[in-house]
Amino acid sequence: MGIDPPTAPTKVGLIDIVAGAGASSPLDFTNVNGTIFFIANIASYGRELWKSDGTSAGTFQVKDIRAGASSSTPSNLLNVGGRLFFTATDASTGTEIWISDGTLVGTQRIKDIQLARLAPIPTN
Image (cartoon, rainbow, N blue to C red; front, side, top):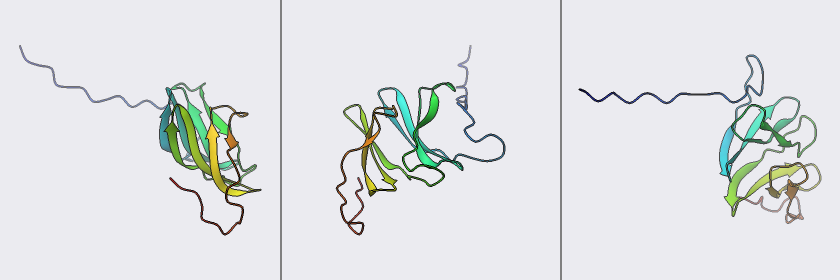
């Protein structure tokens, strides 16, 4: 009687965001109450905020913060008290602090605190 060796973890892809040979280059995975937020890049939308509940049907872009193919380049994803805070760039105010509950309406810039475009960019 021996002990069975441990088995290797199984890798499971949730969804192929960019079909074919392209890549969405997902990064900055952050768990907020069981929902995984991350950043992904798609040519038609640029680098934007996405979320997943662990299923293909529950994996989608949260909001196109900088409309069109220009990226909002979200970064500094952080779970604070069950809410997602991050920085992102939109066309009207530049890089600011945002909050998201995972819905289109619930993903908003907190405040335009970088009033001068040359002011330091907020980071964590």
